[in-house]
Image 1 (cartoon, rainbow, N blue to C red):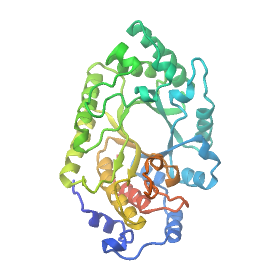
Image 2 (image 1 turned 60 degrees about the vertical axis):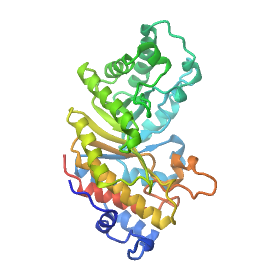
Image 3 (image 1 turned 45 degrees about the vertical axis):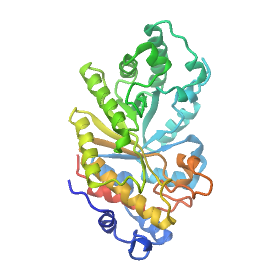
Image 4 (image 1 turned 90 degrees about the vertical axis):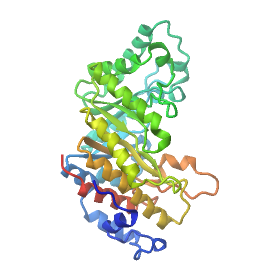
Length: 376
């Protein structure tokens, strides 16, 4: 695989995305870029040409934003609910089931011919479990297993067969130690909590692809996390657990102090190859570019975000086991990263469309990567 410098990457994107501060040519105006995007193939169409699925996270409250939904339905062939299928939405209180937000999004996906992923049957992380669940005192592993069977079977069967892919388990490993995260379920069942959830999901949604989803990344600080996830996947396959793939969240950080060098890119590519060599699919499930640590004007930030994103996406698409690439939102105002800006920092520019629904260089980078991806 050939890795390009940022300047080479931006040149391949047409050069116009390079900011004046980087010595490039003049900026493309937002209106010009919008016109060119409207007449070009959608990202979903470009992905389909290569045997990939492209899409984004969506929340049901966004359905009333007509300009946003116009972008979403044009660009995306698949979608994933952000919060609507999580336990804290569906059963935030014991025995009180709330499927309405998820059902609203399921109806939206069906009426627009957009495929739907499910996220997540179990977020095995106490911080994101309902208080009443964290308060459970299971007397045995069997009791914990029955609790999960009751919940997962009801949710997975409710959306079967419409949901084509489920994040069965989300973030079950400590990102510092790489060890299984403690939770009311892990404490009762150990590693078997993961096996059990996959078996129940398979019985309840037999045609869905079943995925383990986590946020391991390429940085040195993620080494233990990567190792823990690799150990999990090896164990699941050895035990004949019905897992189909790994979901890589891909919330990547643009950090000038930790560059994504050629050596780092090769190491990350090799890690992904270890997983695909197991016969597992790769799904990039929550992509965005966090620019919180990057201090520059908007044009320079946009150019750097696009170049870094292209480096990352080229590696993702080069692996022929990659099947899905989803963003965590399509327009900046809906980025979850807006909630993590320090006072005085400019708003995040993490996504391919800005707050005025204009396409940005990141959208061009995604299109370029999809055009250059090998078919599968």
